[in-house]
Image 1 (cartoon, rainbow, N blue to C red):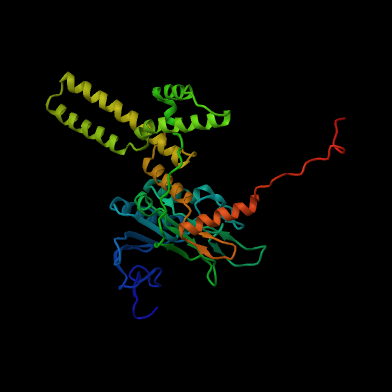
Image 2: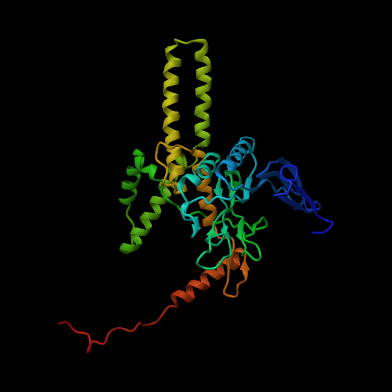
Length: 376
């Protein structure tokens, strides 16, 4: 680092200085918001654009009890954050029992606090490329231990605004940890989304009627063309039904506001039969659409391990955004080991790869010799 760098440290929290943050003030503005023993939190603004995020750099302590302060600190930060937010670094524990190879087996109790914290504040793992493990004790094969303890998470706001950005875990090098790079200068490639039917529509009374009417539609052509055409018509005719349930935040908020207004009026007129019935109807509507919203997010996030009564809209939303980001290809490595980020180059490389894999169109194909193959 040269004279054009500024440094912030946490020596006030730890005599050894566990966390250092460095930046170039000509390019970015960094404001340290909080400094604790296990994390430093800052607001980062790019001076050349409107890119603004909050970042928490983590260096977790070794024991379960010591890390309780870290989880509580992250929950407290989350309560006051409305911007895109990422938190990354050496958390110390693994997140799942299979994130460690060799060494002492991971007991579920040792990772419970970590899992509950990530779920409670609604964080999802950043899209990126990484190895199975981010830490190694670099010992001989029979005593070597490998773990994934370096994590990069984002909140729902991050995935809404910057979910297409790539996170790269580099090789260990001389360190025992993988360096994490979040590349903030990727080109966003906007392509039409594939239509996927939401399961909740199967309970919609208009859905079956739409399917029946569409399937009875006359289509001229051979059978396979007829089927494909009808499936396309079903997609077009069910999109308007899907729009009603795919984005429900505004509808739920509107019902909640009406319920608040009604209950406010009830406070002044406790036995008004019209207001009592209106409150009852609004509560029914709120519960109905909230359950639908949860089911939609559950399907989109592919989170299947939470039971139906474990309602956590924020967590489902974060996992849905995480999955959408992972499905977006913004970086690919070609045969020469060159990383490609241009959407056109990525498209060409993918097409070229599968053409070589599957081969080209052949005028004729070899078949069995009739003189050799015969019925017996």
